[in-house]
Amino acid sequence: MNNGKNIGMALFVGGIVLSIFYGLYLGFSDLINALDVITGFFIGMILIGFSILVASIIYEQRRDTKKMKEELREEDLKP
Image (cartoon, rainbow, N blue to C red; front, top):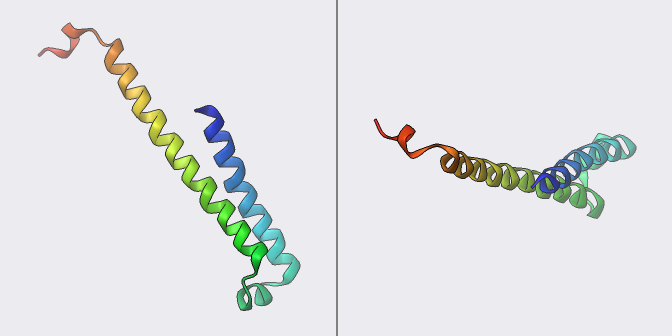
């Protein structure tokens, strides 16, 4: 799932960076007055990247928990 983290992080950071540069290019007053297609695309990149990051982190945590339970000996689990 390392690819999921890389893709998610790239989209998340890329969306934020591109939104900042585009905001500086247009000027913040123009950006607030009109949300156009490009701004929507950048916001979409941020949201998709964030959701991929969260999903890959949850998946990895569950996989590691399952792996840890399998590695523990049965005697260690008894009180």
